Image (cartoon, rainbow, N blue to C red):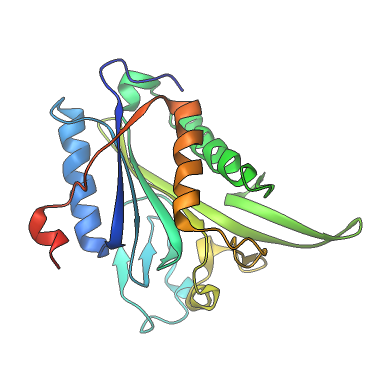
Length: 234
């Protein structure tokens, strides 16, 4: 996907847990500003407190433990997802109208970004037909033992500006995924860097994400948190 012709993509990383309602409000506002030509594109890296989100295709029966964590309805595509500490979330606000107004191609680029990032740590991430997200296959010799999801994605567009984005399981509490049927898929599980034996600091994940993003989407510039100062003081 080509670089936006106007400016570099802002790149912000939070150092504290961000409540979901604050993140969603900021994404919506920033997407509207980008569409109006009033703000730069933004990739925003953060972690959330433990919570579940429901995409536009979520089925109530897939919420197995409705009282375990807060549940937020969201306009992104997909079904139920868990977010929590140890999971790197990257919210991606890009102007597809200035790049390439092709949603399918954009989703493919996001998947490739995830696959490239995992490859920096010798983890082979793969797509699977009919399943959203990026998967890791585990073998016993030549025998396939399991396929587990390590990364998820879901986006929404406002006037061709994307928001929501991707998540990578670095070291979350995997048992927390048990309160939902993740993305509506019950026959496969979830995994993480830690679960696969990769004890990788989040800072190294962030470096790889930025390097691989720039290779596919264009150059970035580091910026301060986009959150209002009063939110940062919480």
